[in-house]
Length: 124
Image (tube, rainbow, N blue to C red; front, side, top):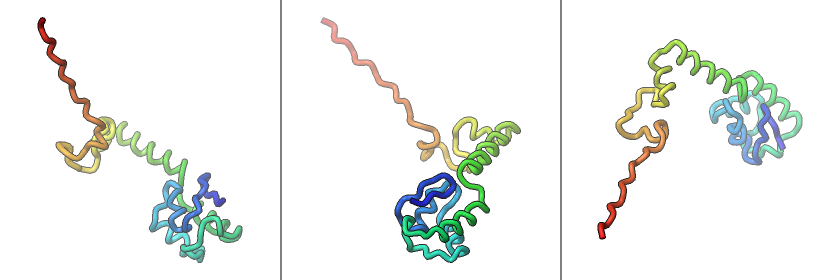
């Protein structure tokens, strides 16, 4: 089992398995494998120790997992502290990047709480 940045990778193609690490997407995984000269079609469990150490050394050049998550939360907190427009949108849990909110913002705004009408009582 290959472990990089504290994440155990699944037994998939290494190009796909590297994307399980926060901060590594498909393009960055491809560049890492290109620099280390590792075949992207090899399975994660089939990596040799030498290949693992090369990939690990290349991954350490980028912020990943805890460091990156901390940087993102601090950036959002900074925007909220200076009270800029993007910070206000984050604080209100609304879309930040100019998307419309009249429709299509369900995942960001959360589920709508519908009022349930009371049943009328039958007079006897």
